[in-house]
Length: 128
Image (cartoon, rainbow, N blue to C red):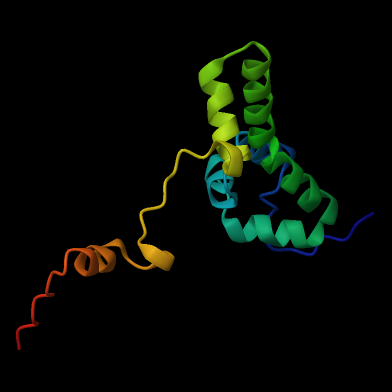
């Protein structure tokens, strides 16, 4: 029989652990998952320090939302959704598909410096 150490009963009940899992699977941060489960973040961190297996699962659960998003993107691309394909290409294949253009002058200097030199414009004197 386990001896009672006294003190408060644990907040980390099976119901609380289930709510934390649900929160992490939704993509919530530690603090928001704790709010969802109605516990203090310190309780979660203490529990994770004492339960490495839960801590490792928590990190896996937190990646679930990203996994689901990538799965939906892949499905949309497979179905021929052009706007999604363009979105993925612009973000994953930046060198080949970037719509960004550089707005710099010669040798990477500020564009304004090149305009001043090109047009022989005198810069305004600073006021004291």
